Length: 74
Image (cartoon, rainbow, N blue to C red):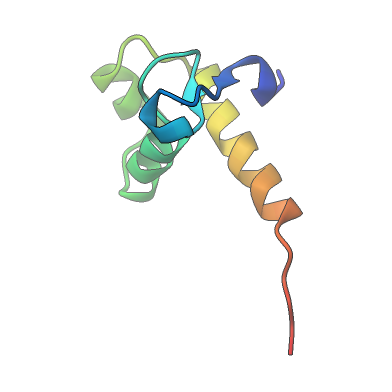
């Protein structure tokens, strides 16, 4: 599974933030739910149109962004 197959970016939707399969739920939304302590199962129960693969795509996207971030050390 590649996150590029699941996540979409549309300039007029949610300010151009990456969304899941063209829906209005963003990667940020999912990451915030996870960071607040929700489990994947809780997220899937609250948002039945999401899949486990959607959540994993969000995590993969975040990991790739972190890996590609430039870190400047003094």
